[in-house]
Amino acid sequence: QQRAAEHLQVPLGTVKSRIRLALNKLKEFTSKEMKDYE
Image 1 (cartoon, helix red, strand yellow):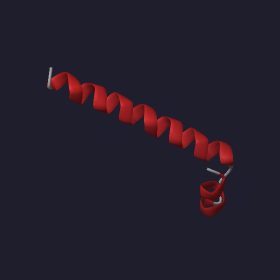
Image 2: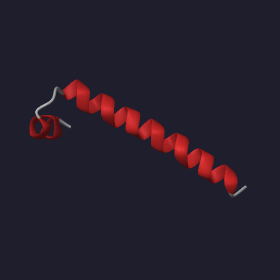
Image 3: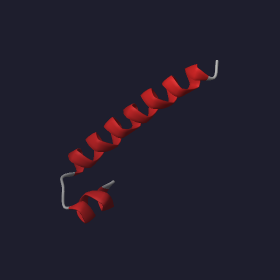
């Protein structure tokens, strides 16, 4: 995460927040998709 922050030239907190938000969206998306298969 530190390397990503340095590469993107953004604060580490921003990288962590973006990762957390992306994981939450992915979790939400996959849970909806899995319900279609039940």
